[in-house]
Amino acid sequence: MSLQSVRLDHGGSTSGAFHWRLPMSVASIGFLVAIVDFAIIEIAALASAIAYHRMFLQTSADVERYAVVAAVCFANFAIIQIARGSYSFRNLLDRRAASRDVTPTWSVVILATLSLFFALKVGASVSRGAIFLFAPVALYGLLSWRARLKTWLPAARESGAISCRRAVLVADRGELNRLNLSRLVQFSDFDLLATLAFDGQADETFRRAADDAIMAARTTNADMIVVLANWADEDAIDSLVDRLRVLPLPVYLLPDRRAARRLRWAGVRQRANYELIMLQRAPLSHVERFVKRAFDVIAASLGLLVLSPALLLVALLVKLDSKGPVLFRQERSGFDGRPFRILKFRTMTVAEDGDDVRQASRNDPRVTRLGGWLRCTSIDELPQLWNVLLGDMSIVGPRPHAVAHTRQYEQLIGSYAFRHHVKPGLTGWAQVHGLRGATEALESMQKRVEHDVYYIGHWSLLLDVSIVLRTARLLLRDPAAY
Image (cartoon, rainbow, N blue to C red; front, side):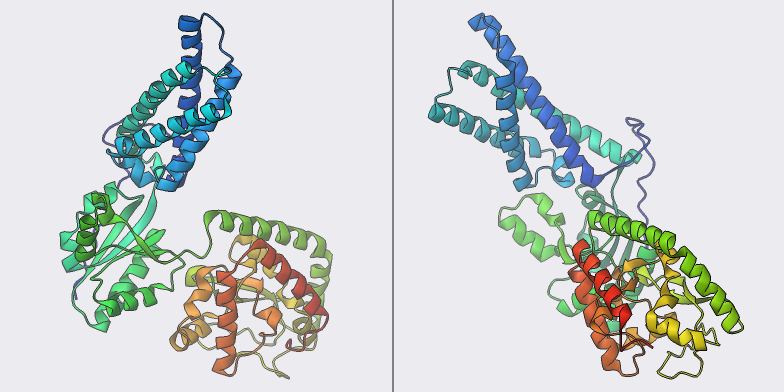
């Protein structure tokens, strides 16, 4: 197997057409285009109404009525455009999109509006002549705007004014040779940070290709992984995707040459060669991550503020109870498998860390007198509120394990890597179902992982609040705590 890495940078501008300082995300482009569409349609309606009434009717136009008509037309226009995907970044880049999408959509909207006027008999209040003038004026404005976009969007993207998703492409070399990389980037909403090509069909080949893709994604802070492989080789695709599960990133599959040919035969436009098929979704959307982070910051801040006197008292008791530091620090596996230093009140006479970490057990002689009570009440976990504020942890999520245990269980449980698709938490879905404490048997860890995977797939703010409330109730009496 040979691997090649090609970095495609799009940071420098050659056109000099844009000088924006704050980059816009690709996701916001469609929204901004829709706002301009609304302005064009409103301005066209008002200008046409005023001109028609003055030139042909010698009266003043009721601009409020025409503004409402324009708003209704835009609403229908936008609904159709959204349904057709015309506001997507890729479609906005397509030079044929204006005539293929805008013109027929606007024609349908105008015909529907005129039919509605006829059915409701509102022609007396809104001049049909003004509407007939409004239709071509608005269409001209929309087409001119789209034509401008074909020049502005590539220039803005090249200058860095538009921030695209960052992608790593891992591809079979034979399929890669038929792919036009520059065209792929041109008609996609992502930039390729690296291209990793592999040869051969051996399992070792797929393992190395996936490992290199994982390393590239982490070092470049990629937002997604794109896989290009022969669709007939299901083992290759499955092997790659299975190993890529360790990344909390969406994984997409590009059509191979046969699939692309069938799409063209089916009458799908040429750009369909670059349509992506999602094989793995990101665990949380941008909005969901924002909501979860806001909940974490608010809850952790309030917790530290309210509990600060109790935390100081516990710290003093730990210091008086036994020799050693007040806080116990240990390297744990966090989001995307990245290690961080977790904080706990010290409950043992030892502070094990590194490659050999022995889990606590019932009646463990290493637990101090005060430590047993702190562990039963989970008070020893409260310093992790600071980890939450730092962004290493969340209030709710899979409990973080020592790095040594993570390496062990990743080899034994196939879905274990899914636990790292979200930040670890102070409490979690597994914990409120009694799955806490040591995991001497592999089945115990498997059940815990199953609950963690369920939580990730069914996350909601309401679920987080429910888990927090159930955890508070368990603190009063939890037979699984020791």
